[in-house]
Amino acid sequence: MTAKDIKEHKHLGKNADILDHMGHEELAANLFRATQTEAKLRRENIQGKDKANQAHYTVGKEVRETIGRLGGTMPEDLPTPEKSIKQIEREQKKNLK
Image 1: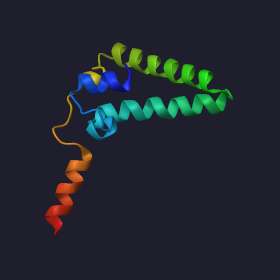
Image 2: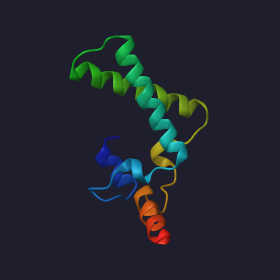
Image 3: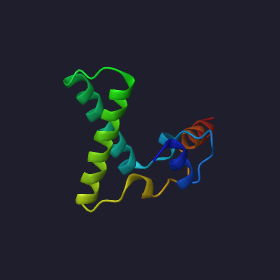
Image 4: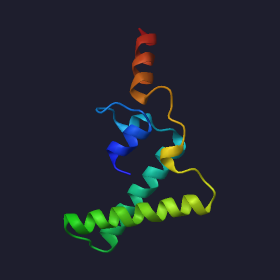
C-alpha cells in the first residue's frame, strides 16, 4: 500500500503523519521493517534509488508474509488510535499548565 492508500484506509487527513496514528504493534512492525531494510542496504552495499526502493519492497513483503504466517493482523488493519501522539502531547502540555 502507498502512503496515500494507508491514509484513505485509516480515514486520515491528507496532511496527517501516518506514524502519529499507529498503535504499538503497527509501530513495531514498521520499525522492524525499517531497521532490517537499513541493515540490508548496508550489508549488501546497495546503491541507487531504484535498488534501494526494491530492497524496501522486498523486506516489507517478507515482514508482511511473516506476520501472516504467524496469524497476525496486517498493520493497516490494526485499530487506529483515537488520538494521534501529537494530540496526546498537546493535551498533556495543556494539563501541566
